Image (cartoon, rainbow, N blue to C red; front, side, top):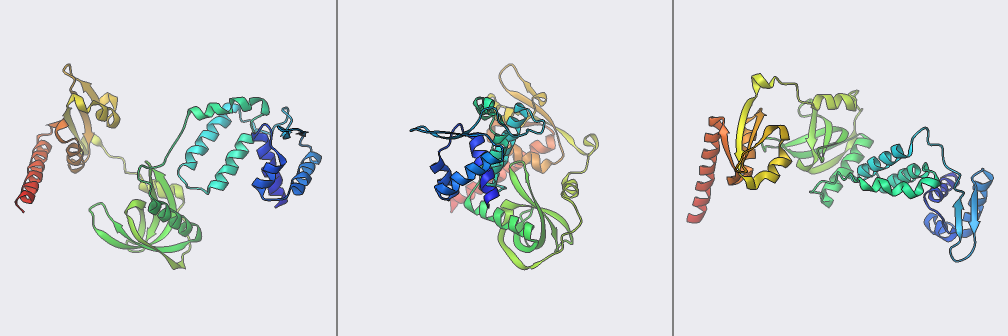
Length: 320
């Protein structure tokens, strides 16, 4: 405990210009006498701590002292700190552990460079999903516990075709991809590895039984997840979409600039390769009347038929 306390005091002093003994005592929940003994121990260990009296007095480490950076430059340390704060937003790690790690990184910056430390704040990485409820966080915490403790889990899962199935799974790892959390697991129902999106998991239960972790590494599991390479020329098809000028912002957000052609009247033509008519139809319907499918004609026809089905569905509601 003393060693951890001494490290915490050192990190605090390296990251702050001056710290009062009472503040250290309050933060570490020990007596002032203990803090004084710790500061004396640090001095004997060769860390040059200077004390100042008065209203603005306290303790600080001499400007010339710094921890060994292990050949990391200030810019590299700033990039590392920015990346860690982005990881912090995922809540994948305990907040206190992350704060200590960030403190250690900050402690590698020399006192002379502390004034530049705010430069990293110009870049902020936030992986927090728009949908981030307490229920989602609770589900993640339970699954992380199950992964660490090798506990079997059972849950109800909604598949891609909206079917509900009960699953019993050996949880292997959690992965954050495209702002969503996924679970790698060995499904005993399918007798194979599967990946589950956390937002589709319901009625999660941690079972009493444990399992022997299988030999598949996380890298191998991720390789299984990757879509097999496809010959787009053979399997895909080209779609041409015409958007109104009012949809320009959304088009720029969702399509590559190389696929966008701007017409003189402000409309936008998008040419793209698709692998699924079903996906294209669903995407087009999201734009309502802001888009027209130019090619292929078969998709345009299906979009029209779907729109008519929607109109009939609402017409039936009016008659009720």
